[in-house]
Image (tube, rainbow, N blue to C red; front, top):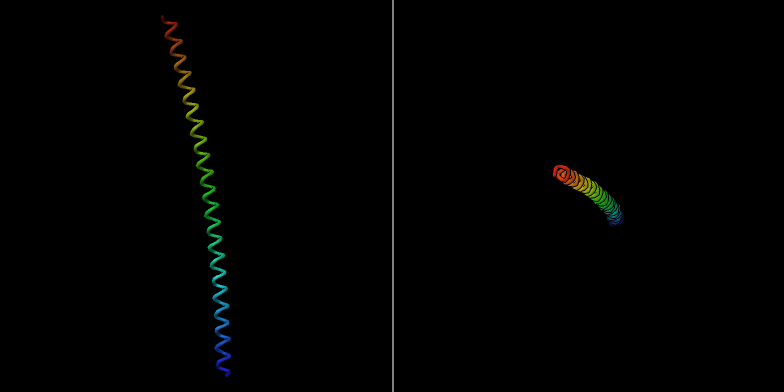
Length: 80
């Protein structure tokens, strides 16, 4: 009888340990998912910022090209 009680107590302890391990694993998985989502959001923001900077640089080059073209047109007009 004592042996049966000891086995039941051991089984209950094992079950409790298993539950605690499952809870810890699930908490770790949840934290990893949240961190992954946070990093993905950060990367999205970086990409947006890079795209904005690239668009600004493209606009500066376009304006420079237009100004250069106007300057050349004006120079040709003076020469004629």
